[in-house]
Length: 87
Image 1 (cartoon, rainbow, N blue to C red):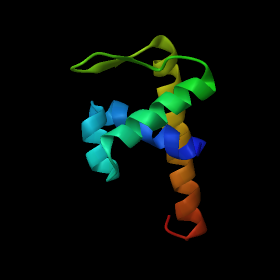
Image 2 (image 1 turned 60 degrees about the horizontal axis):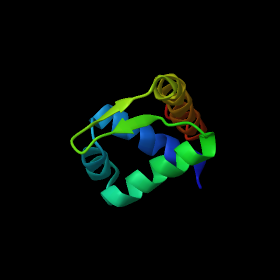
Image 3 (image 1 turned 60 degrees about the vertical axis):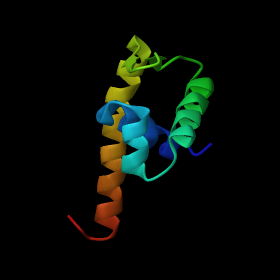
Image 4 (image 1 turned 90 degrees about the vertical axis):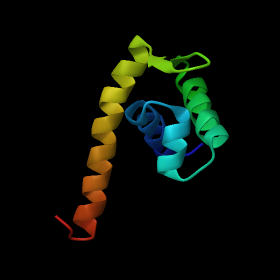
């Protein structure tokens, strides 16, 4: 599992509001996004999202992870921009 990619997919699901909206933004299939988030949950050993047939909501652990993952992804993007001298 590519942890950074799974983290990005999880954050996109939260930001977009759904797995299907996230899959469109990421330009990958919805089942792939769902599998990546499930694999991330398995890796972490915690449930990040409570899924229902119509929507999802963050667990407490999911909220904490989301907040830090958002910062980590922003920093990774900034590092890449700095390497390309795109400040």
